[in-house]
Image 1 (spheres, helix red, strand yellow):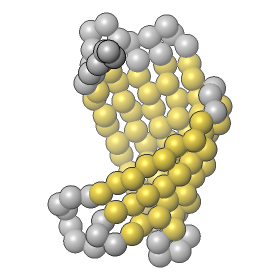
Image 2 (image 1 turned 60 degrees about the vertical axis):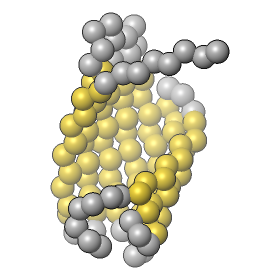
Image 3 (image 1 turned 180 degrees about the vertical axis):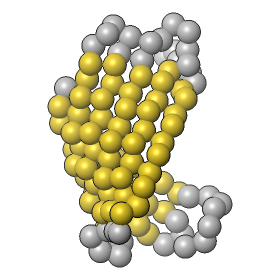
Image 4 (image 1 turned 135 degrees about the vertical axis):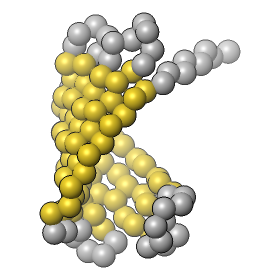
Length: 111
């Protein structure tokens, strides 16, 4: 049987549009009393074509043990109809990995 670890996180994000490129800055911290982790993210997204969006992110994280981890993550995502997006990226830096994401937006302004 596996154990379950549920944690609450506080997230702040600011974004700014410059023509067809968006810049994002974000910060996340763990709200658990026994955890002292926080992370930050700087990202750029540009409109390559009406449905394809290349991305470049710089991510950093400070762990409970005081270690600093850094990642550079280039990727691309595609916008589909009905507010669905899917993307993939390769994370390089402190660790190597492949990231996949599917998003379905509910509510908000109509596209």
